[in-house]
Image (cartoon, rainbow, N blue to C red; front, side, top):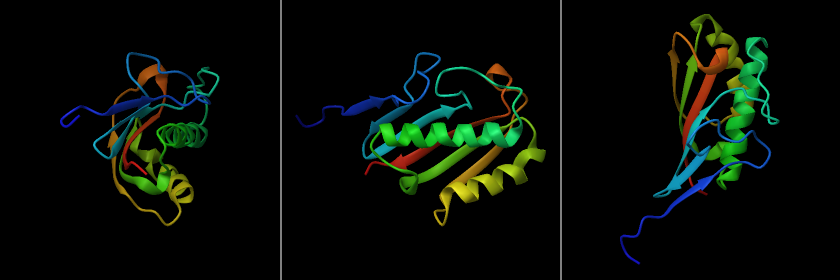
Length: 131
């Protein structure tokens, strides 16, 4: 029916369920919106004491899992926002991100913030095209 809202929510089977009233990924109007992904392990346990690189890699893995659950991929990302509690971690994140993204270079913002949930040092959200 014309004008009917077509919004689809997705949560990866291989990731921890959302910790609140939200979905990991929401598809609408040809776009996929990925909620902020903390470095929560797929089993749902937390490790805020892990080093920054470990946290960044887990947050990226969670982001990619959410994209896959929504039926798209990292190559379809158009915008990424990264929240870090210490801007001094930016060079480490940039190197890990470049390795994970390869030649794909979506728009990106890195925002220093005072604190993140569970004491984590990084959170990542994204907007992608629906494939």
